[in-house]
Length: 292
Length: 314
Image 1: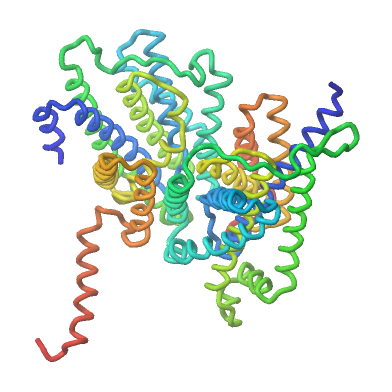
Image 2 (image 1 turned 30 degrees about the horizontal axis):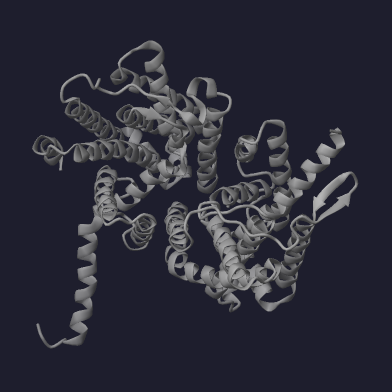
């Protein structure tokens, strides 16, 4: 029971949890940046991603890390449909409406999933379960390292996509100035669909990584990670992807620290305590800009 | 509708229907409380916190002092209002999404406190017994209870009607529509928002206390997301910001909900409620209350199209 070992363990667990939050928060931010919509049902896409991976894994027995790609592709489609049917008609009718619409989506997706897959807790066994790697005095599950590598790879891919491709540049243009983007001939509605789909795909990646790390899941598991991701983007600044990455890591660390020092029951509440303290001091968030 | 509320319990012997109507009335109060806060432009996602605090407040006061629950519901609600002011202080300066997040998180924090630090008093996850509103030793106590709840419901709605019509209500509206202009007109947005929080938390607390004294047992589940989302669903379907909206929404959705339950659906019910909610937001943004006007609007549009096809007939 050396203190440094415990501290290292908290940091490592925090980094791992942070990876899931980063993917969720980056997806939310991508959607917010382009559409100025906050989707409270974002965690439901994480859950769907987890179940799609689970289903393909049961059916084919492929390596779950490979299924990650399929799951992301499926969620691009689902996200695009939901954007077109639900969010497009109410864009610009007020922010409260978006919040209420998300609540409707939460009802539908959670219970729809429960109808398809049942509401029991499920889990997937990673092919690398049980393999650990020695880092210093700490035995680290090999899966956790893979998860961090995958998160980093997805984020690099996203960065390149946004910087180098035409669609990526169009997305950045729409997020900087929607009217300006329209004027230069960008089809912003198409960009909306693509951003929403990509955001959902990132959530699916988070869900798949959640599953392969051996965590259990059920149709109602998405809400709490999603609201935490939302707290993260408030802390890190709405629309700022670097803010989401830093915020996600900090949140993972804070949570695991709190679970160790205050008891596991505080794991969920601590993120909101931090959020409220930050918002009392600075109502626009840590790195948020003034106004809208 | 009011007449039906008075007469139905006398006509029926079924305890099931009376029980259902008591819960429906309680949720009318709760939805109306949420509606007032939304009326002032603040959409809370964590109203279960005030619902639960009212319930715990009233139960604990009743247990420690042996005052009748008929009195303690108002004391418990005062606790909810006090805490409502506290959380309101953090919320009044926040934008919609931030406020939604803080209120949502607040319900989780309160639940965590209830089962950790406050567990010796609240019984933790196991919960505690709560005194019945009307002692079950009195003959036909269910009917008395029903009429007591009905009286409190009518009282709350009249009070809300008075608030919404008064200068305070106008100030809420002004802030919701344009905060800058409201300020220019000499309205202090922070003070009025806090007031809306306090009133809304108080009434939600009354509703929570009523529900728990009706059921007779209280667990931390009361802070769950379900209890935060139901009033929102009722109000959106009925008509946001109107007095009749929460009443209509609660009654209609309760009937649909119980009807679906009778067909043996479990998860499907929630899916249908979600679809109804989304359809209402897209096609009926002012809720069922505006349905008569909307139908006329649709008819007009339909008629406009007709003459194009046969312009000769007139």
